[in-house]
Image (tube, rainbow, N blue to C red; front, side, top):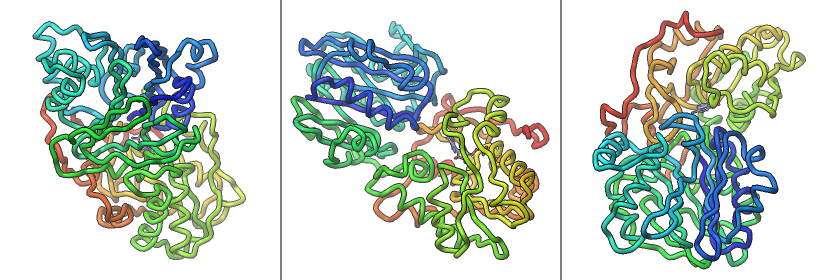
Length: 464
Ligand code: AMP
């Protein structure tokens, strides 16, 4: 998953982009980058591995001159975690400097890449996004808009994009609208970002959200709507609302916080925990859900787990061994809240089960009498092919084990997952959603070459 931002007609665009990337850090922590475009159309680039604050310091920002910029925070769904795959991509072609930042995942990248390589293309990275750059550069259309449009007609999957060609900024959301993209105004300038929290941080006001299939051109602070892409059934990613986006953002026309509270209320309706004495969240991703659960159930909400904020998201760590150690680094129980009580623990989702198992052990060690785990989304049974890093079925505990097996493995008295219907009810009626990872209903068929392997691991091998 990734965070993207594009800025037009703002003095020191790279600094605005840098601040915006801070707000989008949760969307990717492997690498970040900024390309700025100066008054002569010359690009300046800096990319690095790690967090935004580590990559950009004063000397780098000083070099990134210009009033147009694009930025990116990345964690990989296609291509490995190396600097070569950091974005934005930057290339020079006959139309001038072309930079591109992509959030999503292409489902036909392997085929397209093979075809391009056979035709002589030389790739700099293993990321699927570079395919789009090649397609634009190879297009026979006379102008930038036509070249982008031709490239988009070849790609399939999830893509929210910000692109600069020369000094012009373009923004696109794929026809199904998997990933969010919002437009804001700051003075005479325009900012396009994955989430509204990036607009808030830089003091921009939200103009509107791009609709599925929208294609806009921004130059000199003016947004022009171009002919939209060919229509397709809308499938907004429900997991953005469940887990990925920040709760202070509004995406898909919904307050993420409002949806999460409703997820918690629905969960309490579907899976109450009679006899429990207290409810708490696994901070921070399920704070709003635990609040909703408490409101609906009448149980007292307390802080039973404290999170160390100086540790990144556990998932982003590439090896399983490191992930396990990180559970303890990341969370510590509050004994006074837990000891001797029957507790309800609310989490947003269960993916591998690793975090929850470690947490349950901690909560028991802190003296809990009973642990009732409640999950504010249904069992995740399939990988995402549209940009979220839930890699292989073999790692998804619910893909290969029954609920009773999972309950036993986690060591809890009861386990309750929100139903698909309950989740969609909470997500609201404004949108049609992609829920493939929960339901197996993939809105875009995934070619065999793009699928990831499946060999279920026995539970005994799962780390504790
Ligand atoms: P686990 O079940 O141990 O794999 O971890 C589940 C936790 O990881 C959930 O509580 C979520 O907060 C978080 N999570 C869910 N999906 C993702 C994802 N795609 N990337 C990073 N973290 C995630």
